[in-house]
Amino acid sequence: MPNILYPINPDRNIPWNNLPLLPINEKLYKTIEVLENLGNAKAALARLHGRSTVIPNQGLLINTITLQEAKISSEIENIFTTDDELYKAYSDHQTGSSGPSKEVLRYREALWFGYKYLKENRQFSQDYFIKVFQEIKQTSVGIRPEFSNTTILQGGSGANAGNVIYTPPRRKSILEHKLQNLVDFLNDDEQYKIDHLIKMAIAHFQFEAIHPFSDGNGRTGRVFNIHYLTNKGLLDVPILFLSKYILDHKNGYYSGLMGISQRGDWRSWFLFMLKAIEVTSNITFNKINDIVSTKDAILDYVKKSELKFRDVERLIEFLFTQPFIKVKHLVDQSIYSENTARDYLNRLCEIKVLEKKEIQGHHYYLNLELYRILSE
Image (cartoon, rainbow, N blue to C red):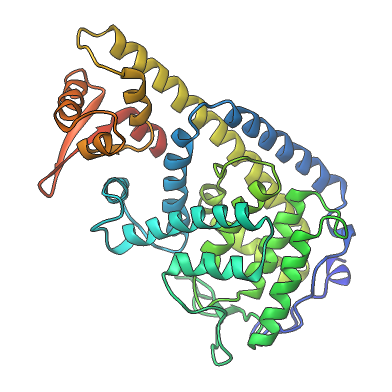
């Protein structure tokens, strides 16, 4: 039985201070079913990695896809913003944004902060997790204090809504000990020789089970997923995000987490996470192809039009770095002068490549095709 291989949480209403340290018993993941799904996930991820490395300007992918990840991951926490609100806030370089859009943009900044942190420091640390959390929440607090009576409640509106489904470990010394154990597990690939995708799935559960912060643990854990893949060289840049799959299969995600603590059911969790990697890799692969082919088609269309543009390749390339473009963006990038930038953007509206929008007295130029791709 699974709970023989993995000690379960005896009482969900009491802090699980005996949450087992890592690693877990290898019999929990060395099964034919898990290994078959692992092969599919690795193949899909490798195909995505190979496709992304040949894109000349990876900013085309990074800026646009991270915005969608930030939006969807925030929706899992019931933080909602519209595409228009988000793209406008990003287009304004984070100035003047408020409410949900501001929270989503903080998540995106945390993605980049953590990515750069690991590039410089190379290894995970407790400091990494704390700083990513602080970026998301824009706070100076760290690991939750002794008096924090954190519990996880059943969501929704059903008969069990509001009931306690999990109580994470309590006491700062215990949290720090378990978090350091997680960090050692992540960094030591000699002692813990486990396939990286399996290791990521184990680590994601462990982080959520430790639940080291008073809030923001879900978003921090999802940021960690992509950082682990880039840190281990499975992707060069952060373009694979599992939040869309998690949002579409929210019940499966949370039941998978609870299945481990309540029944020792690691099998369902591994199958869920590996399928998430496989499906998301394929979706992202197709999205990359759509972005690149659409950009090339528009460039060809603009070149053949009667309207003439100087440095047209650079112009079209830049139009695919974010959905909402402003005259100021082209000026700040030293692509054109203000008058030329405005003239060219208006010309692209004439031939239906862009759509001009006036929002709160400011003019924005919407890349219709990029907006379509990201919205799908």
